[in-house]
Image 1 (cartoon, rainbow, N blue to C red):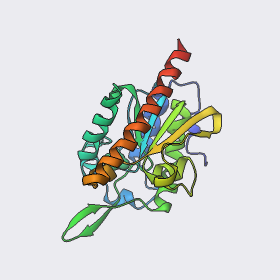
Image 2: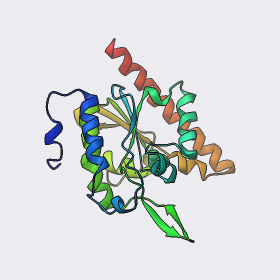
Image 3: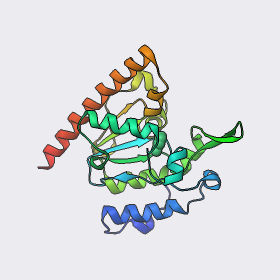
Length: 215
Ligand code: URA
């Protein structure tokens, strides 16, 4: 990691460190996504939660509002969390990239996956969030997050639902991205939902034991 965070490595609180990082993100020009964004999307939720959720990047709705997961995929994420009695206030939610990646198609801008260079350019901010929040559990939503945080060769279909030990005793798992679930139908949809529900039960059990440990 480079020295972007010299300014935030004092004795500040998590909130102060995150506020300074968010300020840096808001004026970031480390990649060309800065040229087309409306708002940067830093992250929301409880910076003291043991659980961090990491998605791919803002879409159109997130770019318009500056908040993560506020579109259809966000509504489904709320339902997934609610299935294990969690709300977004119980967790911290962010993305691998903080600006919308889009491409012109049929006269309008469509969301696209962020490129490797864009993910790498944004990675110091994600690492800064991890250093400030120190989550005990990370749930990667989709392959880009899993490839960034768990293993660059991560295969979401084969490797989701398994636990991985990251540096500093952090436990990480990946599951399907809510937007992927929304693209399924029929039997595929039922199977995908069943797997995600199973994954999220495992996440919840780990979240509960992290809270128990703190008591
Ligand atoms: N998809 C993501 O990965 N992140 C968001 O914030 C919204 C949709």
